[in-house]
Image (cartoon, rainbow, N blue to C red; front, side, top):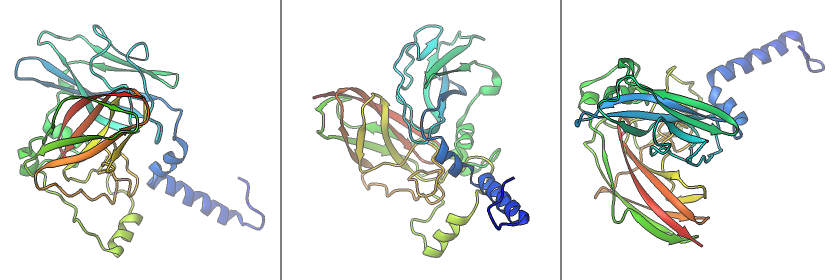
Length: 312
């Protein structure tokens, strides 16, 4: 080990130990500085659940190794399913970091022991996720709440077992037209049962804020703050879309004050009295976009989509 001039070996070793502890306790901060862009996206098979009509839903997500880059991969060789149709409704625009339970693919009741394979090739790295109906991958609401961090590992409560997903319904036409630079108003009705109960006060003192900023993670698994919120993002489309007001992130941004329910200081936003959330979307490039909204109560979620055709 090389030491600075005038620095004793014990002092240098202490500095190295302190850095190692810092990286161990705050690994996301180190990764945030190094994994900004240029890395691949790992597709993930989250599990399956049965549907009332006898079909099954395969549930997928992904891990975008980047903290800032949101890569695009059109349907085709770089983003496809097999066997059968390459397009199974998967995203072509990928948000940063871990996105669990991002979409579902319905397969018939006679699927049996076959595999459904999702292949992604982003930034020159090919990865695959393999979906099967093996019993170990069976998912229910408790699994979803636990995997996303609403519950502790292997825990539940009467409240969490009673929770049902919120319902998000986009108001108006599900296909819209606009021009570059012209805002589209998006209104979404959200209905929720009020569970799980929000655990975080809407106000926080300066002293409590300082303590939380310095407190290391209390769990080894991902930890999410329960509270109803609505998010809007691009699901398909390669241009930049600006949403106003800015919405909470549906992906696991664990950094402090990152407007994410996985961040240590996140406060659930106020819920409109009539349950109608309004946001505007402005596009900087022409094209066809699929926008995705998710209502999330902390434990469970519901998605809706809208197509916007944008011209010059």
